[in-house]
Length: 263
Image (cartoon, rainbow, N blue to C red; front, side, top):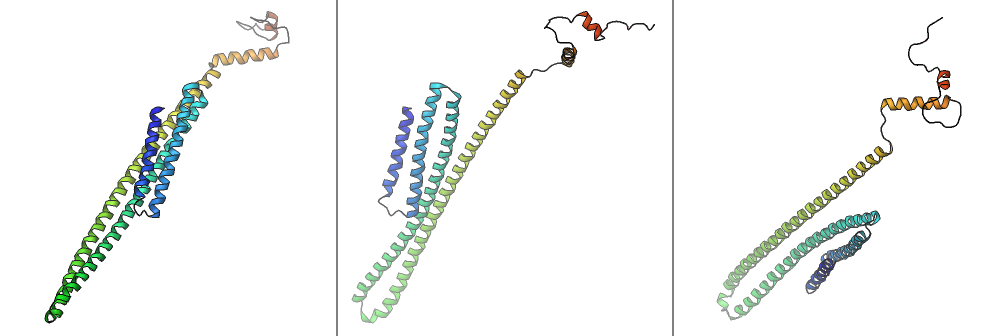
């Protein structure tokens, strides 16, 4: 229980530390919403871990069927909650990746704009010092050079954005694949446990039925049936054990050996 408590405390500290680290940057509403979903799922997971711990303690203390059933149900809900946490984290990763692309685009646009402003200001200063005779030619040459530099900067910024988008898509795909594999493994494990429980219950039911209703051989069944008919046809008397009296056997026409000769 102490180890579980330490793990939960560490998870809570990590969950609290992540939003604090992102608080300084301009986080988008989508990322904030995804982070809130992760925090909520992690909180629910901590609560479910507490419930599993309590259920396990009851099983260890009492060992009753109800306690074991409660522990099984708590473990199933714990698996579901872990899947929800994984899904929430995938959603956060996607949102963060898309936000990173957005920030890269904004940074690229800002860089291009600042570079254009600097080039323009520098051109104006140098233009004032230029000789009037060379003014027209200088302006054309400078403008051409500036256009080239701006295009190069735009090309570089576009390549940076594409690289960031590709990296984000690869990361998101890997996270989705990992989450899907984990969900598939959990589902397979749960199905296997369910089928095993059904097989155990079916085997127990067969054993109980076999004990309650033992099979009779055909001879014993016929003898039992004949005895029942005799008891019903015989006159009511006091209960007697052993063979029936000879008189009752004669009345019933029971005779052993050869049949009597005809007179």
